[in-house]
Image (cartoon, rainbow, N blue to C red):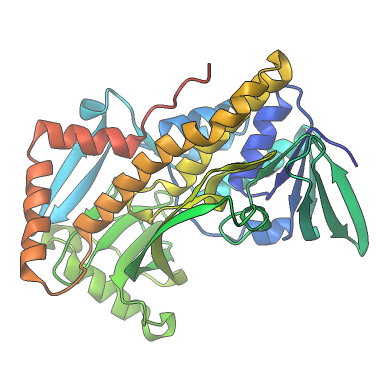
Length: 393
């Protein structure tokens, strides 16, 4: 088999990259080790920055998002029994975010690719990358018991934190930076109306809580728990009682509870790989970086990587600008580290790290300052809606 760009991974970043390149006449093949059904079982966050919304429209995978997604013009921080709202339109020059689930994004991209005749090979086993530092890189994989070789010009590693792409980078050339947090998020999904029309991030002496949503009838809630906690130890009643305890009284009073339809615990970490280019292999999304979900940046950072890589590859094929290939990592990492900083800051300000009273008072002082200062409100709003993409020139 031959293609121009081999894409490893059929998550949202791989599918989005495939669509953007396909619309510019660049041939791609996507390889995914799981089935389409399995890929769609991955429950993830669904707060989309304006930049990602624009990319989905460019990829012609936006019809359902525009119909069913919910534009959010602000977000709230709750602390000391009060609720302070950050107005995005006022403090981020009119920008907003879109609440629309990652599963839906993935499904929409899958359908768009199928409709337009893009090649996606699912259940591709034993994927291996070869000859990364030559002008003829290739990928081998096993499909239906047969070994297949895929020749290409470039490889985009969009296969996540545990995928083969980052593992294929030379060990003497790769450098990683990591911070592991001493807690996780216990999250539930329920067929209940959201407690608020926008997200509420809560700092409480018992730990962090978040009120989020998927739709007007589907809610997603989280509470901070220790890494030693087990999902089976948390009944629905115990979860709802703990959530109510951490919310301001006026919010807890209007919380509608119900049976959970999904419940899980996710550990939190910050992780960055440098560089993001190894010969003709380019790392994209979770293959290169992880952020704690506090800042709603994971999926959006993957989208910004896709934006930069797609623009560069389009210029390579249409204008022979191969000089831009070496700039991908530098440009992408500038935005990644700013998002890592914001996610780390949000995590540090909102979670309980210890019983240290001084640290807790510092958190409350910071929340009070940022939510009562024009500069503070602008800082939060600008970062939350997403920093602008750099031009590729």
